[in-house]
Structures are given as C-alpha cells and as structure tokens.
Amino acid sequence: MATPSALRRARERHQVRERILDAARELFVGQGYEALTMRRVAEAIEYTPPVIYQHFADKDALVREICLQAWRAFAHHFQSLAAVRDPIDRLGRMGALYVEFALTHPNHYRVMFMTPLPPDEPVEALAGPDPEARGRPELDAYAFLRAAVDEAHAAGAFAPDVDDPVAVAHALWLGVHGIVAMHIARPADHPGAWIEYRHPHAVARLQMRALMRGLTDCRAPE
Image (cartoon, rainbow, N blue to C red; front, side, top):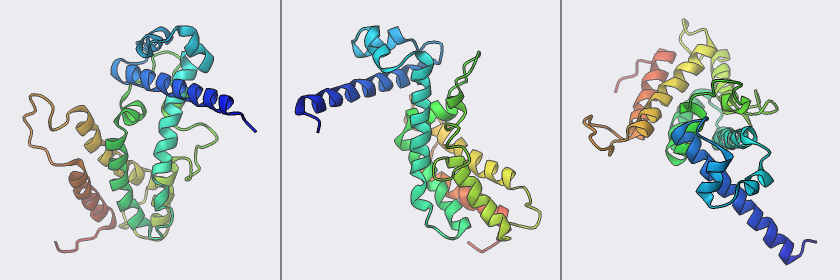
C-alpha cells in the first residue's frame, strides 16, 4: 500500500505533467509546431528543461500526447449516444454534442482540426486516434459517426440517390465543423466583428435539420 508521501509525490508529478501539457498545447495552438520547443515549455511553467524531459522523451512525444488526449476526449464525448437505437436520431444528436465539445474544449479542437501538420515527418497522432483505437466506435469518434451512417444506410433511411455512406459522413461532419471553426476563429465578440452571429448551437441545429432532411428526402411541413 502506498504511503502518504508516495501518494503526494505521485500527485505532484501528475500536476506538473498536466501543467507541461497545458503550456505545450497553448504554444502549439497559438504559434504552431515549429514554435513549440521543450525550452519554451519549461519557460512557460517556470521550470528547467530537464524537468520536461523527465515526463516526455522529446518534442514529438509531447505533441503526440497532446493530440491523443484530444482524440480520446472527443471519442468519449459521444458515448452517451451509444444507447440511442434510431441511427437518424443518433446522427442528429451527434451534431449538438459535436458543437458542445468544440465550445467546451476549443484548444483541443484547434489541435485536432485547425492546426497545420508539421511540414516534415508529421506526428501520426495529429491525424487521428492511435492505431489501436482506429475503427472502434467506442474509442474513435469518426468510427462512431460512420457506424451510425452505415446503419441508417443499411436500413434504407436515406433517399434513393444517397448511396455513398462515406460522403454522407463527411457532409455531416464538415457541415458542423464549419460552424464551430468559424466561431472559434472569429467569435461574435471578436474586436471589430461586423457580422451578426447566432449562437453556434442554434446554427448547428438548423444545419443538421437541413442536412438530415435533404439526405432522407423528408419534406415535412414547418
């Protein structure tokens, strides 16, 4: 059984590691891959570089963990919908949860979808979850989306001319991405904003309704 002093040391080590990740994420998001260095992370948290190396072997290991944390949190965010039996209903609710994740974790979202890949030897984790998670709906958000789209397609829920589940998944995903990316990059309270905005949740609901009606060829009255 761990002693109180050992538990305290483990807790302090975890806290330092999280401070490192927070500082590195801020640098990565704000200034890009090249600007992120172990020295600058150390300066940001007022430690010496050797402390950073006690937690991460090198810069790529640090970036990889930032990215994997983001992808894991993203996948976990949708698991509450796993019990929704109707795939069309599940897809509609995914839009709302997508926006919720982006607004709650804007830095994670920037890392995953709004940060350019390194020019040379890109870190694999930037592109998606770790290989063991890829294709598993419980660990991979894109796989969760595809599973719902595939289920709806197999059930004949889409219009007869909608016959490419991959294109459907991309249309749904990128439609909502555009809304949250604009909000994160150019929020309504951004200095000098001249466009009249609506809240991303309201816009996303409208977007998902339009997309789902078009995909299912549903022309129900307002």
